[in-house]
Image (cartoon, rainbow, N blue to C red; front, side):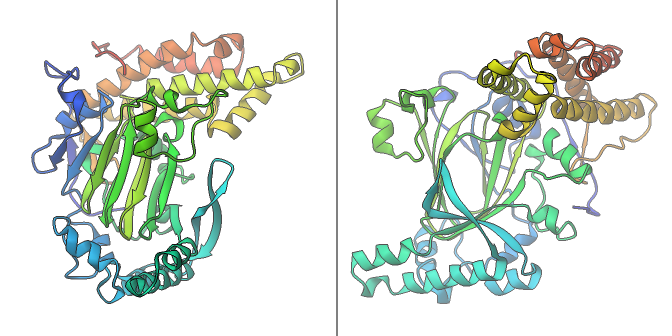
Length: 445
């Protein structure tokens, strides 16, 4: 989304002493105000340590605040907000404004009362049809006090549709309804996908009270951030490895969880109660389930960068190993390696060549920006049309890329194809990066 706002610098500095998470910090999830949390502190305390945080006051100036009726409850006025979600005369959602700014396009909708394999069943609706159904569900809830509990449950079961994973920013690029908070601007994934006009990982979610997202960890092992525009969400979230306590004898994880199940299995977990104008940072590999406790709208991104790209690479390796094992009886077939890459992309979302494409893209942009710095010119690299990176940030990204490429060239699949495009591109990129001065790096997550 283009913007006339002056560029803001992402000021990254070498990690301060005490960057490693201590036992006290790892015992809870903090709430930090955007007014006193610096980019550098967020980068090292939370992203680098792969630890969640809730950041308040992140959407004060977003245009999509107009999606809320004027005079709606504030995040601190929780009782009034809950009441507003029962009576449509005072609902927080500004349906008329939404229709005035967004056309009647097709939108992806999940039926929270229908399971399809290990996710909710998906349908497509016209946006105005979804809004009309949402409005009708509010009318039904308005009369709850007049109905017995059985009728209430039946009415809710018929109207639990959740608009999810909607690429609204890509669909309407001229509509600047939000701006990416500075904390989440170092986003290699969407930086490439948006520039090349490919399917990105920027989403809008809209759902009624009691809609929910099933138990999962985020795609690729990425980070995610989720900012509530209106409404409240409840999260159950757990550190990496705790999910194994919930697996069945075949290694399958449950579709949904609750506190009782987690207590029975002695799972270490945290509960987050998220209000409007708050962003939840979800680190890599943290499994979670989320419920909308009121009618809710949120903006969400998945992304990775220098902090967690080693973990994304390890996930890619693990999934490649699973593919090779699954079709091991075909290992003598012609083009077996290419077939594995095709299957990897189908199951994981990207393959090795896609990953190298992204690394080459990120490296090229940072090398160019660094060259501008050394020549005394203005940094030409803009992230989300709004943010620039300082010299240390550019050098840190390039040093992490160099380190990662050393790991990639040791991979069995890459080494097996020493005469192939895959190996040659990795080796060529590594040699380019070796021309940059090396720097000391903190331990990987």
